[in-house]
Image 1 (tube, one colour):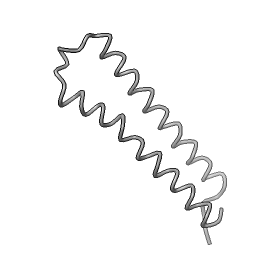
Image 2 (tube, helix red, strand yellow):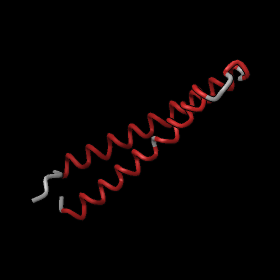
Image 3 (cartoon, one colour):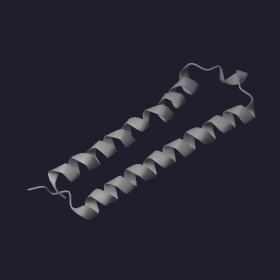
Image 4 (cartoon, helix red, strand yellow):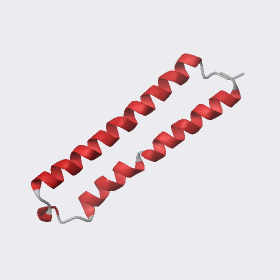
Length: 77
């Protein structure tokens, strides 16, 4: 993998990591700024399922990108 390819892959990794801020922000808002008693159980369950799905999608994307870099050999001369 040359420097240009490595820079591109690292840019994609940075983007994927940045995308983790969305579900993290939702968790933070639920934990610190919400009166959880005001939520209907079904609404809270749906919110948590959505956050869970977003997190797993981001984790899978990061793992895929990391495996791609490892396969291509990220060692640059």
